Amino acid sequence: MDWVDIMDHGTMFWKKVPSPPRPDENPVDMMKMYILVNRSKLTIVQSGVQASHASSEYVYFNHSLPSTKEWAENHKTMILLEATEEDIVKMADYFTRHGKKAYIFKEPDLDNLTTACAFEPIQSSDGKVLFGKFKLLR
Image 1 (cartoon, one colour):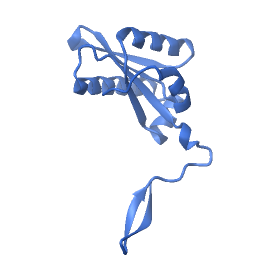
Image 2 (cartoon, helix red, strand yellow):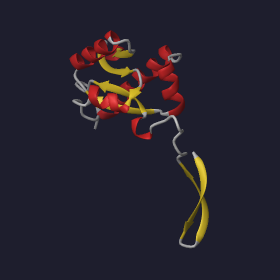
Image 3 (tube, helix red, strand yellow):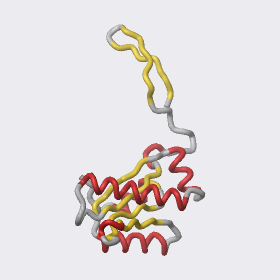
Image 4 (tube, one colour):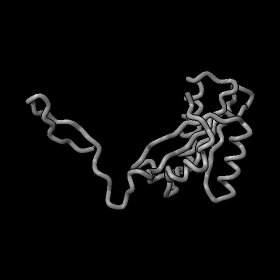
């Protein structure tokens, strides 16, 4: 973020605005971490907590991956999507078969129900293709 001069109704003030994109960065295709959440037995608040558990565990176990470092240092965007437990397992399997990481979180207080899965950060253009069938968590 950069500070810039803003003129509003004759008054000059400083405002923090996003820095311009780096020359090597396409702002339209930023990296995002996609998280699938199984809402079958969860409230919306619990769903957010489960997504947080999955993303925290993903970063803890995969902090040295270049994609995780790039995402954590420069992007930090997470997309939370609704999915069934079956969809979560299938997508995690698909990712791992293609050399990408995924972290499935199972909630001990719900008999180890698969509640969320955080996926290795990917370009948003790839995410739209891979996760396009899922609806935003609401």
